[in-house]
Each structure stands twice: as structure tokens, then as C-alpha cells.
Length: 64
Image (tube, rainbow, N blue to C red; front, side):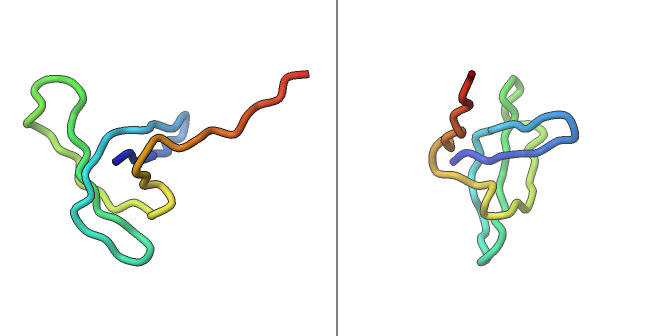
């Protein structure tokens, strides 16, 4: 699954694994993308709107 993290300056789409669900939130485990892969997992509750099974489509920007 893919999760969306929104920071003050940007957003990130990262691979994750859901471990708990409610109607409004999902607890996910985000593993590091660089070695060592087995350290420093991030476990966080996210809104279900920020958890996707595939990479979400971006709205098309029309250039004039």
C-alpha cells in the first residue's frame, strides 16, 4: 500500500503496511527506504483518505 505524508513544505508518497483500521483511520508501518532496512520503522495513525492501495492519480494541470 502507499501512504501520503503531508509536511509543511511538501508531501511524500511512501510504501507502507497497514496493521490496524478504524472507520476513519489506519495505523501503518513505514519502513526506511535506505539501509539498514530493519531499523527505525515509523508507526503512525493516518486518515483513511491518505492510505491507498495503488499510487493515487494526480489532477492534470492545464497549461495555457
